Length: 105
Image (tube, rainbow, N blue to C red; front, side, top):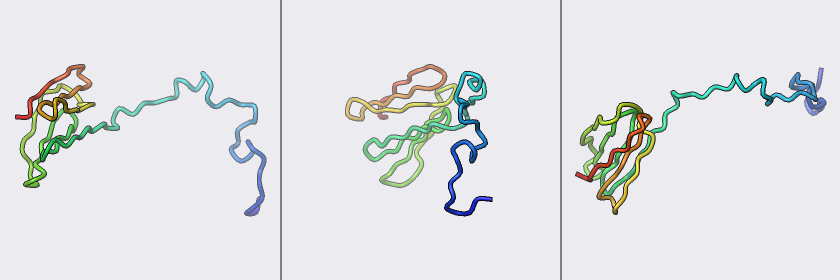
């Protein structure tokens, strides 16, 4: 039994042989990408907060601190949200491979 402060040789503490490569091609099929981890884009445009939640755009007024509206134009999750032309327009892109351009109204 090792006491606190005693060091074990590398590999012994992990039960991994020193000459093994745990990141080799055999482990390639064991990788998993978690699609459920969301990307929720958010921007602030003047006194409005625009938030992409799933396939929905939610609008909040920061001045009045209240919900304004919801837009449901995408078929799947919104992945990016950006404003341009000094905040007069904003655009969204989503997993449905569409780009939607909105004016600030």
